[in-house]
Length: 248
Image (tube, rainbow, N blue to C red; front, side):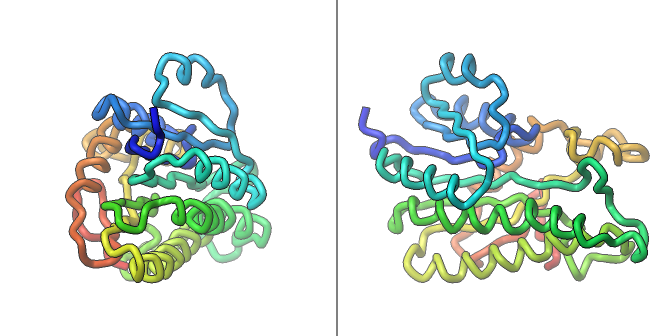
């Protein structure tokens, strides 16, 4: 089959809970669709790839060399890429935890959190956006967070996570403005999934009411519905799982 005739979605950060649910739903919704899953973790995806020929699992260490190599390979394979989901995110990791007070802010932690939440997404966009046809009805989604909203910040704390998500929003907006100058039908979304039952939110789920703790399947389903309903304008929407606008 000619890949150029096959609708293809790319999911970056594919080993996360929401991303895996998203991959499953993309494949279930359209038997002819291909999904390219990109993850730092090799895990054991051989069986999944073998059982679903539409799924292509690639490993990347998120270095620019790796990103560029994957982009070259995908470009030469001529996939018709119409959906791009960048799901990377970190809130806590090893010795890194959300800062409750200014005195807890640490340079190394800031660098690590900004790397995952802001630098990696924009670099993936740099390499993957050119693969999407300029005349296609494409959609680009990057996972954001309500706590990245400057206007909505009423509680303080969580310095690195808040600031890195706010930075990601600005980087995405800037890329969206540039890209839509020659690809008018490409829609961009910064997506707030809400508190989802994944490893990222696990240490912070106490006190979250059951009706506000979402399953990855629910969030993935809502995201796909929102993406399909995105308006042509504005260039970039910042929406939550309900499809409601989040303040910048």
